[in-house]
Length: 203
Image (tube, rainbow, N blue to C red):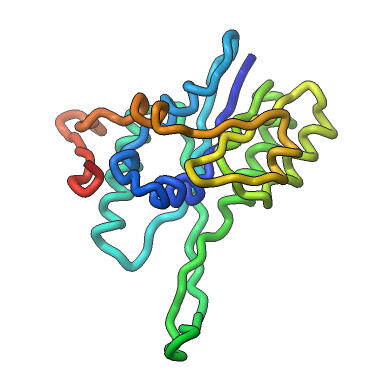
């Protein structure tokens, strides 16, 4: 049985951040997805949906390093980008107005790839690494149009969705034991003679 893993990068990152697990940011997403396979299942692709960080040069460099390492280490991993949208916000206490950036398009990107891959017959089982209830409608469509296909919700740390629990065929959580076993190597070769290393602040 073929399996495709769809990862909500924003949801996963904030779940790890909420637990204070910076050391797991350097995460091998292919290895993590394989931890949720059952006997007889074969992981054929990982679709990682994320957005590029803005307005923070150090954070941008850490993210680029991570994305380079992911791409080099897992050739069958596909990165799909959304974007951050600046929105005005006002401080409730002092009235100061500032720009707040909201991540956009990740849920739409996941939904589009999930439905397209279902139509193309590319998976028998989809792993949905997210707790975003906005993904309920595409899961409902998969269940209605392709009853033989299964969608399993895999919730990041400190993330949960009762709506996805009810809609998906099953659910589970990413626990620390799985994270410990799924870190990228400290140094990853991304081209002949060129390596990238885990950011110091992620140790």
